[in-house]
Image (cartoon, rainbow, N blue to C red; front, top):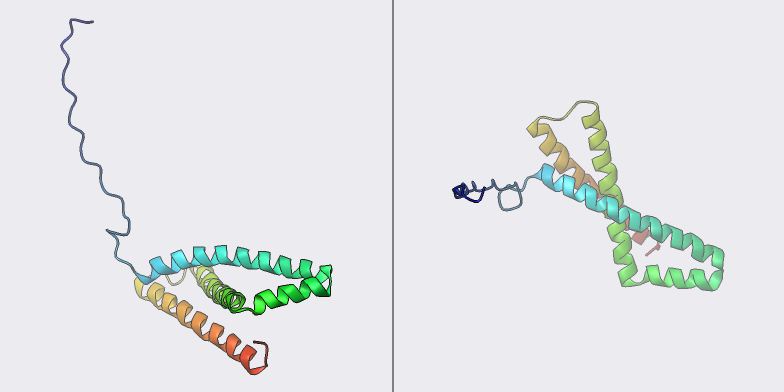
Length: 139
């Protein structure tokens, strides 16, 4: 065995590059997929905020007042605005996925149009809710 001639290893081929952000061109269906995941995570944060609201409400007026003060601060309003965007985006994109589950809207033109609609609906619904909140004095 020790007398056997050693052959040099064959050179390895260069591994193909995976499709990452330097290779793929951004398109709307890619963005909607990424935002759908991100808004799903944001809605989990919103569920924790809702649970904190319930706990503070059950804990008495002082605790609830502190909670209201925290959510009424500029940072709290920004978080609530983000949760509103997340809710409406996730809702609209979820309906889009239901349409896809029915086997419709898979061609590129329809998929791109529905992506634009999701973003437009999100903006319009979020601004409408916050405008109503401002008009009723909830802000």
